[in-house]
Image (cartoon, rainbow, N blue to C red):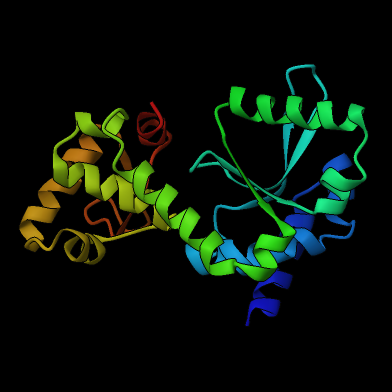
Amino acid sequence: MFENVYEDFWLEQIRHAEGQRLEMLRRDLTGTKKLLEAVLFPVLKTFEGLVLEFEMLSLSGVKIYGDACHPKLRIVFEEENFITHAEKITRERFSFERARARSVAMLGYTYFPYSRDELEKRPEFCQRNLFEWIGRFGSMEGGGLHQLPVYEREVLRLSLFSNKPFGLAEVCGWLQLTKESCRKVLRDLESKQFIYSVGGSASRCHKFMITEKAVALLHQ
């Protein structure tokens, strides 16, 4: 199953890439594939929202690339092989990698590296690390979430992690409330421009998605 899903995902990434990023996607991605198979797919259950060879501009103005990135979660994932990232690395390359990590941080992303040995020998531990990060992110009192009522906060948090359109039924399941109560939560979120309607009609909406305004609030 993973092989088929990965192949479709990789081809989709290729179709929307150009320039240097396209070249990066056509190189040997064995390490990145292992990262997806051992950690990201088991935890996230989907490749939706992920970008391979995510392109960024470093502090020095040079283009840098992350093995995989989830832009909405603001997290860059890396697979690092000991031989290529430590054992045979030059001093110049070592300094470049440190500057690269700082650039990722300055751009507002969490840098989340895994060694090849960890991915191959301790995948459950690697998965647990990501689960813990997601749990802490979703409950940060210092973030913008605390500004909202608890039910609105929970809907935004879960919709961000699900990364796909959601409807009244999903919200009822998340909040364990009646349909009418959940409709009010959705109306309030829509009036604040934290969610927007997807599909449906002028009189009836079937699905919603989180807005960029809400994503920015979650990362304050």
